[in-house]
Amino acid sequence: MNRLFLKYYIDTTRFNILACIVIGLFTNVFICFGTYGVFISFITYRYFQNHQYYFYLNQGYTKNELMFKVFIINFLVATLLFLLIR
Image 1: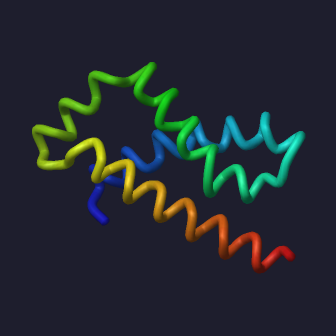
Image 2: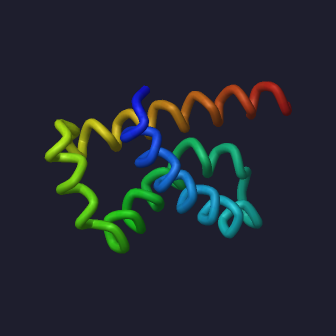
């Protein structure tokens, strides 16, 4: 994982954690973090920082590739945490 992808991951995960704190009041936080919280973070990242995708595209990353990698990482982390806590 290189530094550029790590920057995208941290930026989207900030929105994801914020969404999971709000939605976690009504549902399981780990399920939110691994599934629909990721999609909420993609929507908010695109709304607030859409111009950043051109920077990643110039570096060789497509938007779908970035989103897929972030989804897989968050899903695996949420699954592991859910199994460890439960």
